[in-house]
Image (cartoon, rainbow, N blue to C red; front, side, top):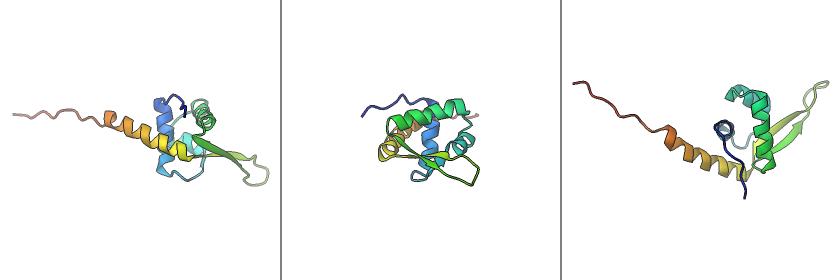
Length: 102
């Protein structure tokens, strides 16, 4: 299976999906949680959907409000997210040596 390039921003999005892997998530919610602007976030979501790592669904809300897109991980997306985050964590968790005073 081909996978998209996983940028630090994409990793951040995948991490948010892993917090509640079966839940449908709104782009606006993800934008608030990640701090990513829509011009960065939505291309990531579309790319992940293109590679069948996310599924998307239109949700009708209240009358007069346009339907909104929601997203959730597919089984392949869940596997990829877990693997990529497991690879990334050891690098970010490298501890600096402690220095003793004395």
